[in-house]
View 1 (cartoon, chains in turn red, green):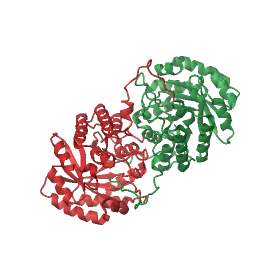
View 2 (tube, rainbow over the protein chains, first blue to last red):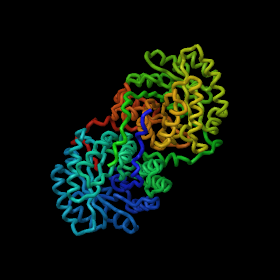
View 3 (cartoon, rainbow over the protein chains, first blue to last red):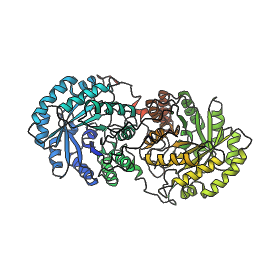
View 4 (tube, chains in turn blue, cyan):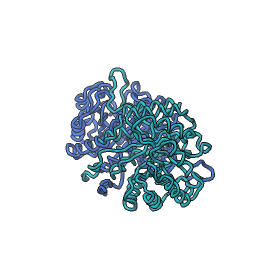
Length: 320
Length: 320
């Protein structure tokens, strides 16, 4: 009998979940939601206990029409008290707009692989990093925090493997700019438990001042598997999208982000605190599906909570 | 920094995967596949390296019309060499039919919860166990092995929680009947990592001669998460269905069994041997979807293998 190797670290009690549905969830969807619908979805999530949102991206409205209402959305959601709102910014102009709109954090993003960064922002990784210096300076004197996000942290759809050193160097750069939180994005669902372990252990060595955030996609079905691995390593910050919104342009029909309500279900069952109620998240997921006009890939919203029992006389029995 | 608590046991190298698609996958599907289609699916799985099948169930054809061809299917698949074929049997009559058809193992099944057993086989758990004695005696003198399967091992859709003691008692009973393998069925997707740990540790205490097999459904999105937990506990036997075939009568739209190809992907990435090739499994999953005439819930068959790269100039870039 093997030793009981797989308990969560005793120090892990509370897990921070950032909702990225309004940003990463919506930017790849074919439907563009009206701002009022986005606000309704955010309110539903707030009712469930969500307090941290990656709400939008201050990119070119032409490049990402689904997020063209960035400033208006921040202004609307800002009226709800007690939230931490972050937004992606690609450049100084975006940072100015985000500051003016009233976000709490700006997220600077770059890919760990050259070809993905070129496709995404038409720049080399080095040029992206150089640009971050100017954005960081523009934040000086404001209350707005700087966060980092590293896309293709676990693999690149164009290049394949991404070295852990490349991810570490970018994380160090973000640490030097004063970022406390750096998110490792699993952009096209290439993360696996061994890669999670390797990357987290490396980051703790080369960028010890940074708290890593894990951002998985369920493209190949391992999203929550990688969360369990992250939890066992003591990582306490995750990003997810309600209903599993989003998708991958290279995998039609495959899942997008890990679903927030499925994540909350897992964390609940592991005895971890999030401040977020599963029942409310299921309601929010059902609202998201109605707003998007399609079935979303998440599971708990379809199956219901674990102990929601059925009437034995009114249902067919399952075998297996 | 927490200690590196989450490595797989060093003794775990090879994992046995039993394909249950033709049985558990098909019995709840609205479409009844012709025998020739089932054989084609099995051949595709054999081409990928699958050698163990839970092929069918010798239940009443009226109760489960989708499996009415049990004897014919076993006879057809028996012509492929080198396979281990098992089939569920509900009673002595079923055992006789399974023996005559030429299976390698018969699987006796009972639910750990009274109400599910009543709904499933119209009998108390005690009556099911008593019946097993007669079936076991009828196998004496044959080469056919006896296996056990415990439905609702992690929770019951009618009663809620199922005690670990109830599962342990049934496993002991199977051990007394000479079963070497006992499968814990997560019939409606209620398993969680802590329950997996609790049940496996208990079984090792009360039924140490038995090798537990884990049979998860992905109804609430945790199927592969529970596999990772099982692997960390050293469990080396899993059951899965190609494409994630199957479903749960209480959760329309929710996933069924864990998908065999997604399981193989996970095991590959963890460095575990199965003798099964992912590429061949993806082909089998696509065949399964064509035969069923619907999209199946599995992921890897849609996204493709992890390192299948895309042409950067021909595809849209993803962010996040």
